[in-house]
Amino acid sequence: MITRVVYTLLLYCALPYVLLRLLWRARRQPGYLEHVAERFGRYGARADGPTLWLHAVSVGETRAAEPLIRALSARYPDHRILLTHMTPTGRETGEQLYGDRVMRGYLPYDFPGAVARFLDHFQPKLGVLMETELWPNLIHACRERGVPVHLVNARLSEKSLAGYLRFPGITRAALGGLAAVAAQTGEDAARLSNLGAANVVVTGNVKFDIAPSHDKVELGRAWRGLYGKARPVLLAASTRDGEEALVLDALDAIEAPGLLTVIVPRHPQRFEEVAALLAARRFRFQRRSENAVIAPDTQIVLGDSMGEMFAYYAACDVAFVGGSLLPLGGQNLIEACAVGKPVVVGPSTYNFAEAVQGAVAAGAAVQVRDTADLARVAGRLLLDREAARRMAQAALVFANVHRGATARVLELIQL
Image (tube, rainbow, N blue to C red; front, side, top):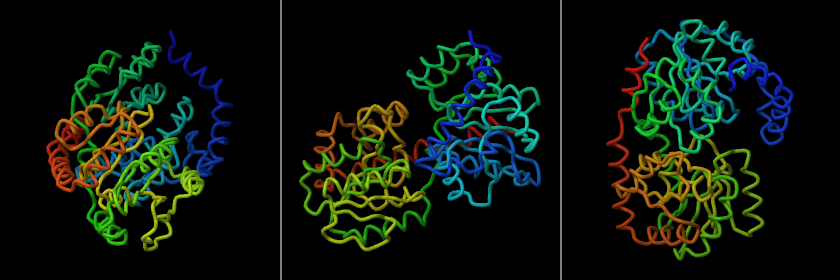
């Protein structure tokens, strides 16, 4: 059985690999070579007051944290918010969303010394880990110092449960060190309790509390005018490696006159890769970053920008949410529903299983089997405006009735 001591020894043994991985990832994202000292607990500026610390690994968790950060800032106006990440894209998203309203940095790797320096430097009054982030040494050190740490918006699929069950000792110790767990669903709560978590409360998914900003919705409406209001617009949102080719295959079978497809890759480091794919497949495309009027003969818009997903949703007629055509677990469909768009997802949605099931049951989304099914369903919705309108209305209702998780989480993590 792996104990925390054994885990720490293995972590030190893996240090050369960790450094090599930083260099490897920096080939595509140079941001991985910036602020490297923070990953070992060495920081510059200190908070100028009591600090509330919230950890959001990457883009999805950073966006999900928005309603919670807003609520914490309102409830504790004399506290600074520290937002930590593990990826450059998460950090960049935090900068776009929150600006100077929060402090930001990288969470250190889980070495005892790095963790101690992090806690000494910021001296947080409490910690919030978004979704499923378990760092045994960090949680242990916080407990030793009397810093309550909460796992919030927690989810745990059957696949992830099986992985954690391979290391029951260290997993049980980490979960047992948490002050409380706010689970998204009853199923998530049961799995986390089975692993050893105590004080588990079902609060719902805080992603339902993310409201589309007025300026992004207006930006999307402006884009829609530039696209050509008579053109049907299909959005492929948050696509993952390998999915863009499948979406392009589906377009060949969609008979919608004047169709314009907008493809927004999930990760910005893949923008050039997708542009090369479009060029190789001889599609006429333009980039969002060009900020130009869309020509009538343009077939594809490459969404090579960050922080504008609500605008992309506002500008489309039908939204396919990626990460779901391949066995990747799917991406967040809640934002598309919140803007009031008919949603299509693929067969792999275990990351958002309950949200997808609820959206399908509510008539807000359709789950397809494969690329051919995507072409059939998307093509039907693009041509049948009344069916699309009914789904759009159902999407708005679905998003609205599930709001309120943030308030329940806030009651759980009071100082």
